[in-house]
Image 1: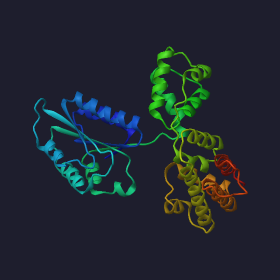
Image 2: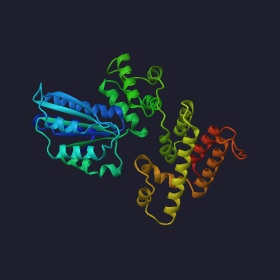
Image 3: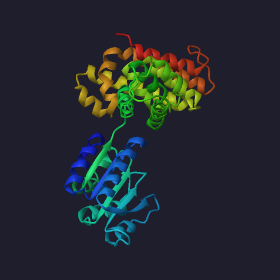
Image 4: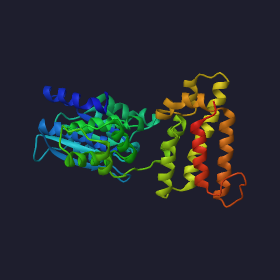
Length: 346
């Protein structure tokens, strides 16, 4: 059974009322705060249902998977029901781990609940036999990232839990300051709840004075910003990455690779291929796939090729070679390319 993270609380309430928790819960996602909250919710309901003992297993590369079988067949010393909290940070259990997880899923004991925490898996991993076995025997909870466009609304919901309301301007301000860092957003919201009384609307000035700049800049967030034509965000990301000491060759590679992908997509669409097939062929998924159509309308193949050539000039600058057509500051030149990509030419 698959569930979105937002549907987990309703599922747990229903199962707790019936006394029928699933034998296996898998929390998969790369957003630490949301994954932690989902796992905490499962543990809290399980404790209320009488699962009084908990064993934590960290399944790193040297983990002995026979310990999972021992936990499955062992008896509890202090409680009738137990939780086995299995952490799989790499997301790949290997052959022995996959067999151990499949064996558990095929015969889960009635007095034991297995809670598995792992990162988001790619499509190939999701088709693995151990993944399918866990999904069939239990509940697989997908924890999705909160994209930038949805972040203000997410912050508004979190503020409402504390009885606080803020104007859209303030929500956007917080979103800008905590870009890519939901843990920081959670902390800033908790701080606002301590500073200001409930049921009193916050002003943009109050929020600006209280919220710190705690952004965590992600180089791979550049790609959807460029495709979406969001020039201000692209510049903010570039400035943040430069300030944090992100290697310029990596940032340049991300921008150039996105331009190459866009150029291939433009050529394929011009040749008559359906957009969906093009996205699958070029492995454009998630937020990038959602903004791809507007990028194709905004940018021509000639413009994409010209910007890609300018990336080659930046590469020469990085290597200490002459690039007469480029600015002497490669970061400034890269910012100019980002703005040109965001503006388009159609």
